[in-house]
Length: 148
Image (tube, rainbow, N blue to C red; front, side):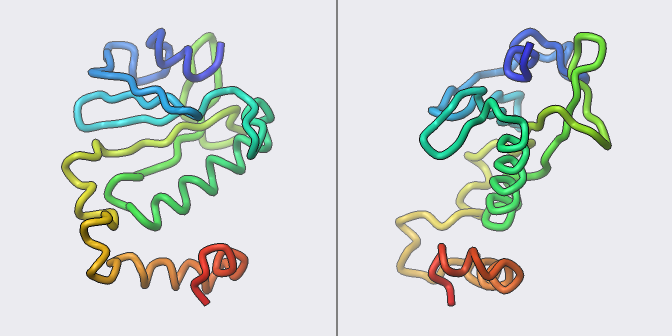
């Protein structure tokens, strides 16, 4: 059983008595909505940009994805949860995780405050300084993002 199946079967510690209000399936993930709390789990598939069936790739992708999304939208992307299958259930752990999921807040309330919408492009992005600070720490990102 993988983490997506565990969410669907209520076999994630802390979610046994919860039923998602909705589940959205994207190309690369499943997103589970529980009221204002949202959880994103990446599918276990191979894509042109990486192999999500590979544990090392998955971990690195989760960490990078969460980092950059948290930098740009900290009110939405709250935390990265490391989990491990123990006794037929997934539990959040402090060490030696087998997988991860991303804890988020529901978009519709805080998205405008946290992200740069096309309608707001006339104004400078409020995240420009965050990007600049992040690029100072990660110079390779500056080349990709063209913030030099």
